[in-house]
Length: 206
Image (cartoon, rainbow, N blue to C red; front, side, top):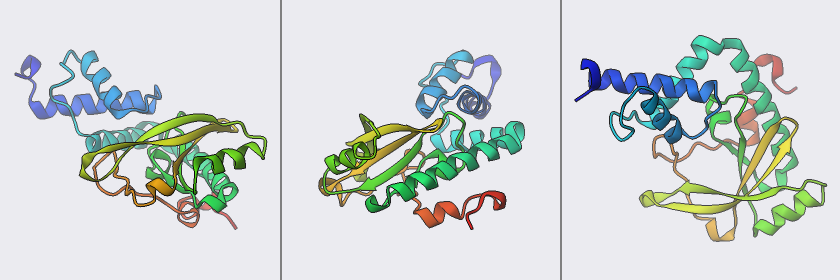
């Protein structure tokens, strides 16, 4: 039974609100980790009353609008401007922006996540190293159809104060269709012109 007579929905809402604060203020980027930490802080077993990722994303958006306002918008525009510069730089690899920077829920801790396409991951590595960028070789798990997950090669490097992560879709993964970790639907990915259109008027190009 819900603790202290609280309803199931009230507990879900409390967990979502606290998780949102942990994401927006403390920089926890993983929704599952934020939910578990929030549940434990509220004295609830982490396997019960868990809000969905969609509820968490909405709670983050609400928190940012209510408590961070213009400052969050400034942070978001800064990250999107940096994403635009990175996308221009990586033009030959057809970069697309994904994740919180695209969704509008980014924090000052958020990574700029780009999906890039090439024949082999080595092409990306060589491109970066030839331009005096020494990326860390990492990987990212991406959900695809039938609710399966694939591990894709990725590169991470710093651009100013922000981390850029390039998730590589090479020839082996050309037909993969990533799903959103938030709602399980086809992932929203934005081209350069689409990201430019998201900027506030004062920061828009041209």
